[in-house]
Amino acid sequence: MIDGLISVIMPAYNEATHIAETLREVVHTFRKAGAEFEVILVDDGSPDHTYREALKFVSPDPGCVRVVTYDENLGKGNALMCGTWFARGDYIVFLDADLDLHPEQLPALFALMERSGADAVIGSKRHPESEVEYPFIRRLYSVVYYSIIRLMFGLPIKDSQTGLKVFRAEVLQRVLPRILVKRFAFDIEVLANAHRLGFRIVDGPVRIRFRREIGRIRLRDAMNILTDTLAIFYRMHILRYYDRFDGVRLDDLRLSDSVEGLRVAEALRKS
Image (cartoon, rainbow, N blue to C red; front, side, top):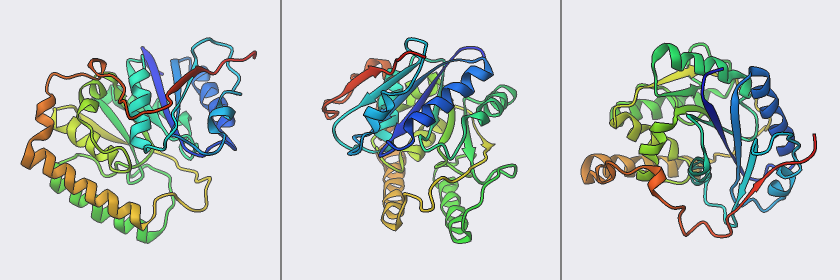
C-alpha cells in the first residue's frame, strides 16, 4: 500500500452490534494489502457495550489493535484527537466505524497521495469519480455550505465531512494542538488550519454503501456546524488564535484532564 506504519483511528459510538465485524474487516483488508499497520478504536463514551464487544475481536499479532474508551461522550472530534495521541504511525487514517466507507478504498487514496505529493487526502462525496447516492436536498445543502467554506478558508476541496481521510502524521502533529471543536465541525477546523500552515490537501473519490437508513446528523447538528464554522473563521482571521500554537506539537501535550475514566486495552485473543 505504502512504505511506513499506518495508524487507523476509528471513533465509535453505540456500535456494539457490529464493531467486532468492522475490526475484523479492517485488519483483513490491511493484511491483504501487505501494509504495516495498527488500529486504534476509540469508544466515545458509548452507553451500549461497544467497548466490551471490541475487546472480543480476534487478532494474532500483539499490538495490532488497541481499544481506548472513556466515560463521557465528548464527540467524534475528541475521539479522533484521543486516538491520534496514541498513534505511532507515519500516516494517520481517519475511518468511521460503521464501515459505510470500506477500507479497501485506501490503497487508491495512498496512491493519490504519492502521485500528487499531498500531505492529506480527503475522501469526497462530491468527487466526480465517487460512487454515492444521497437525497437531492442534501446535495444542495452540501453545495451551498462548501461554497461558503471555500470563500471563508480557501480550502481546495469540495467535501470535509466524509469519514475517510489520510494524513501524513506531521500534519496532525502540528494541527491538533490548535483544535477547539470536538464535534461535527472538527473536520473543518483541522483542514482550515492545515491549509493555513501550507500543507497540500487534495480530495479523492470514495464509494459509500450506507448501512443505516437514517443518518445521525439532524437539523440541530447542521446549525451547530454552521455556528462552529463561523467561530473558526473568527478565531482564525480576527483573533489570530491559532497563531499562538506555532511550534507546538501533539507530542508536547498531555491528554486533557476532562477525559475521565480513560482506559486503554490491547484487543488480543487467540486466532
